[in-house]
Length: 65
Image (tube, rainbow, N blue to C red; front, top):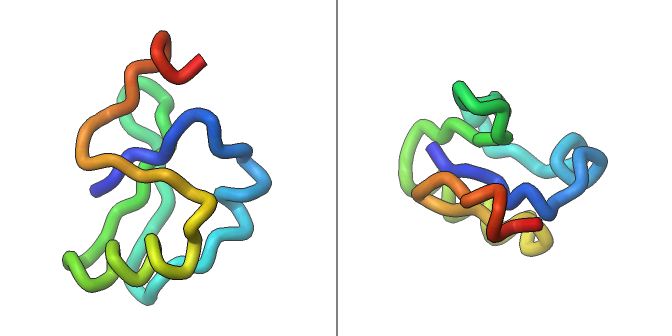
């Protein structure tokens, strides 16, 4: 699972190229996340979507604003 930077627009997230088996979701706090089947899928996503910043840990909403 990777958290998507809150600075990324919903339109960009919706148009992202997802690898097979990956799913978009929201965590318990409403932050956008992507669920990956494996490390390869995560790297593929990052390569295909350079405008989307992801993190192994949740982004702090206060710092992202």
